[in-house]
Length: 487
Image 1 (cartoon, rainbow, N blue to C red):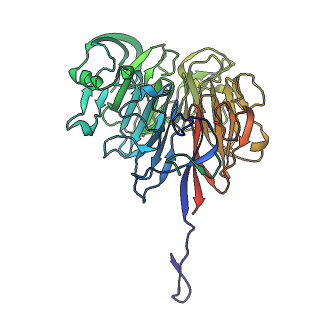
Image 2 (image 1 turned 180 degrees about the vertical axis):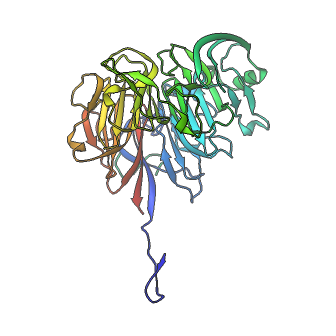
Image 3 (image 1 turned 60 degrees about the vertical axis):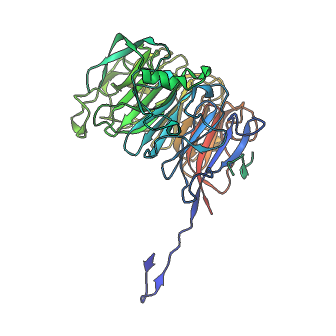
């Protein structure tokens, strides 16, 4: 509202915009037929949510379930209650229609991520909650069901179903149509391994006794125990591992690391508590990043160079590999490399983070990882892909794997700048600066949103008329977008 001209008040009315969530692909349980949703449909907020609330972000989800976040910080989940993968997600399980997930009322969620069958969320206080597949859930405080009575928070040190367990961990050295709707939707690890035997607490036994036999592999929501002063800003979830990024640019990891996806320099199979991932060697992370010294690396020609950047600003997890971006735009990868998904010119596993040397000199602004592939975008809006390409998920127009980054050239992206990227298990998506979304790759379940089940090996624009797409998040077999539409 501005006043102009002789005291006459001129009211400038801004056009009100509505936040919408669209989805497509396969989410078992969201329709009676349990059939794929081939074109974008609108996801409605649950009736239990205040009419003053609205959608804030989408988080893709995992195998058969989806997640989105409201402006008030509620995490909304939906999907299958009994299909593959979903049997590992407990604490009420995700309902078939969107409903708030039961986290403590004081937890205001700002971002979330999901792997094959585990979920991770971050609160506005920098705390992390995680649940689902038990081996993916680290030590922490279990959050019980308040309906079962008071004082159900349990301190849990183990996530195994037997009374005695062997646990391997590193020693720490530090601290249907676009207008349609669907039912209800109108410290650094040393790399050394030590084996510890501990007895499961009676509290954990009680927590597990409330679950049915097929749920013994699942874990209740857990408040992750972090080192004092650590505040997490974002998380990424892979097949069986998790990365978390702190507000000072330090990466933490936990879960399965058998292919090096935790970046600890070894094939450590299980990390049961958060450990620093040594992406950039330094004297220590802190608010004064100027003292941080970049690590030396060796490129494909054997030349030694200094890694651009002093801290990490972006993270991504694939099925069994990981990627991070430094503040200077350097891309580092580590983990499983069978299909070239680490982008370093080989199919070897990479046990420690190192730069993708082919991209040196190109500032990377975003990265996403799928089951076997990786997609990144530069500050200039170019798209680079590498890794497995069995279903066209690299978007190169062929099905040949790429062990080095390849610049994507496609008619649908011509003269357009990509600004956001996401990957599902075997499909990819980007948002362009004009608010359009393009998808490509595996389409057996309609996860490309193009009205059919035909795979695409080049990007194709998804028809969402009248809306400006703000974010995209790919699940394993489905896709979500956050969009704005004039009311």
